[in-house]
Amino acid sequence: MSLLVLCQWLENTRPAVALRDSVWMFNLIETVHTLGIVLVAGTIMLVDLRLLGLALKRSPVSDVVARGVPRTLWGFGLMFITGWSLFSAEAVRLYSSPAFRIKLVLLCLAGLNALIFHVTVYRKVGDWNGEVIPARARMAGLLSLILWIGIIAAGRAIAYGPGYDKT
Image (cartoon, rainbow, N blue to C red):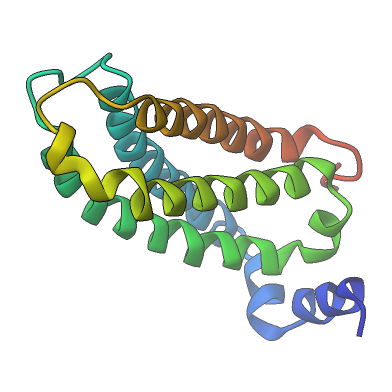
């Protein structure tokens, strides 16, 4: 089964059709999706800015991470559930959207960046928590900022890209 066939099937499921045909439900879910993105990107960017030494300088990195991660995970759950719902209602249209594909690639890269950061350099946060942030941690923060700005820009560009003219 091809990915396009899977998208066609998903788009024709009862929940996807109901969401697409609803006068207000799609917009409501899209709004909640945006709130999830704000929660995820906001908490991640606070950590990134702390790693870069541009914000929360008096707070240890471990405290900023400890306070941010639970909120990030809640926001990610919200973003994933609502994003999947929105995708299901427009799967075929999004299948051919370059901006959507870019967004997914950037999301994967952001997740990989976070995973690598947490299993490598962050494991030794106790050694550098109150001192100079290691270059690898600063690079992870900078890369994360760039990726999340790209994710948000690509997500916004979906509605303006080729093949997405709503009728």
